[in-house]
Amino acid sequence: VQLQASGGGLVQPGGSLRLSCTASGSTYSINLLGWYRQAPGKQRELVADINDVGSTNYADSVNGRFTISRDYTENRVYLQMNSLKPEDTAVYYCHAYAGLGSTYEFWGQGTLVTVSS
Image 1: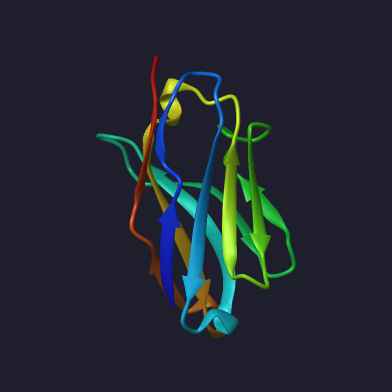
Image 2: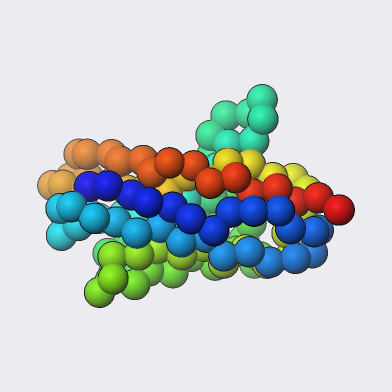
C-alpha cells in the first residue's frame, strides 16, 4: 500500500484546510485509514481515523473541529480541518493499517500545516 498526501499549507487562525490522501496498491487489504501529526519537539499523535465501515475516532484536541471522511471507491481519505489554532501546526501524516488483523502498517509522506497570522 502506498499513501500520497496533499493539501497542507499556511492558514490563519480560525481558518480551514482540507487534507487528502490517496491510497494505491493493495487497497482491498486496508482496514483503517487515518491521520497523525507531529509538531516540532513533540511525539507523533493520532488525529483521527476511520475504519472500513465508516466508524470514526478523534483526538480530544480536534473533536468538533476536524472531520475525517473516506471515499471507498476512490481509495481516498480526507481531513477537513476547521477553526484551526496555532497549536494545530504540525506535519500531518496519512496512515493505514492493512491485512488480516491489521498486521501491516503504512505511512505516507508528511504534509506541513502551519497556522499563523
